[in-house]
Length: 281
Image (cartoon, rainbow, N blue to C red; front, side, top):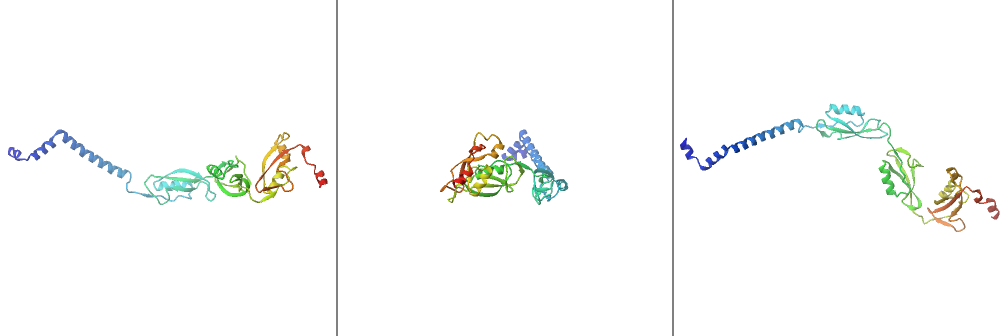
């Protein structure tokens, strides 16, 4: 034995001494133990997460939510309600859409998010978009879940600004409850036309009567000034125009879409004497 040790090369002797060292031995043991622990964790995770295994997502659209949940459970998946909408063509409580989509490959116990049709249409309050630009009106309506319907242009000095907001052919007031997703028609200013029209005589007419006349002439109200005799809403309905600007007369014309300022009262003494006007004619 002594002869063998004496014949060993210096490198062999150094390696033997190195691996027999207490610290080196412990480090090697730790390294091997770490390797086996790491490998064991990989095998465990591979089995636990079903690595490489995939399940096909079934199509649950059109099913009632309860039936969709049962079907997903049989495919080892879970369901979660993500949103609700209202669609006329789909039964209330039925699934409108799903995520992931049908046919997608997922792991076991994956959540499938369902969008279900509401049993009653969701309603929102109609905002006021009159006097806003078209772009502002569009943003405001969309923020409330509403859409733009028809855009109707009429001659008016306020080009591309909303003059009226309409729903199903009639004007709709701000604050009115309306089904979410409804289309709102907007009456917009086209700008002043080069065409002209005679200035109509509005004196003696009520606001409603004058509005009909202005529509016929493709003109609009400007400033509407009520005097001190008009104190209630009932007074405003009875009030008549006793002055206008510009005034009517031979050669008095306006561009289509222009405005006429009016002054209104319920004071009968300010009403024009039609009989005297007829005699003068």
